[in-house]
Amino acid sequence: MNEEELKRLIEKYYNGESTEEEESSLRNYFRKDNIPDGYEAEKLIFSYYTEAAEFSEPSIDFEARLMAGIDASEINGRSEKISRYLLPFLSAAAGLLILVGSYFLFFNKTDSRDTFTDPEMAYAETVKILRDVSSQLNHGAQVLEPVGKMNEITRKSFETINKPSRIVEKKLKSLDYIQKAISLSHINVEKNLNK
Image (tube, rainbow, N blue to C red; front, side, top):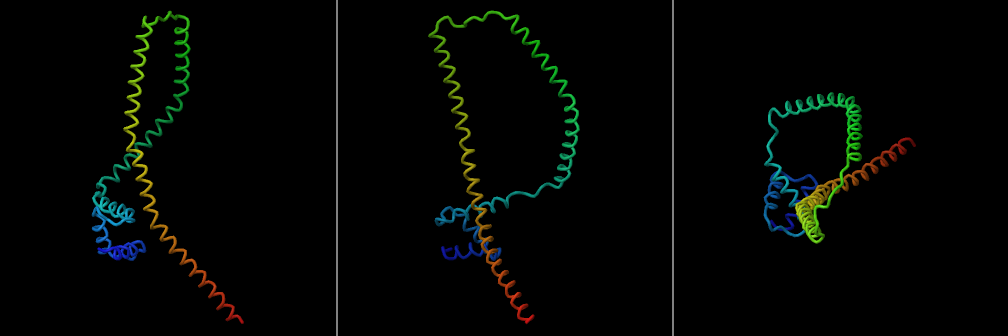
C-alpha cells in the first residue's frame, strides 16, 4: 500500500466512511513493523483493536457473581454500623493501655548500657547498616521505573484516542455554520412572505 492510499484510507476511517474491508486492510498494514513516520498513533490504535479482539466475552454467570458481590458489600455495610458503635469503647481501652504502659516505662526504668565498648567498631557497624539500607532503597527505586514508562504510554494513548474526537468536533462546527445559514434563510423567507 502506498502512502497516498494509506492517507486516503485513514481519512475515510476518521470520517466514519470506511468499509469493513478497508479497515481490515488498515489493521493488516499496521501489523507490520516498518511503517512510515507520522503514523505511530494509528499503529497504536489498530494494534489495540487487534489485541482487543483476543479478549473473550464475560462468562455466563458473570451477572450472578456481580450481584453476589454487591450483596456481600451490603452485608459489610451492616458490620460497619456495628464497628461504629464499638470504636469508641476500643479507643478508650487503647488509651487506658497507653497510660498503664507509660507508667511502667517511666517509673520502672532501668539504665541502658552501650552495646559497643569500642567507638570505631560502633561506627563501622553503623556504616554497614546504612549501606544496606541504601542498597535496599535503590533496588526499590529501580523496580518502579516501568511504572513511569507506563504513565508515558498511557498519556500518548489518550492523545491518540482524542485525535478522532477533535476531527469529529471540527466536522460538527461546520454543521453548526450550515444550521445557522438555514435558520437565517428561513427568517428571510418569512420576512418576504409577510411583506
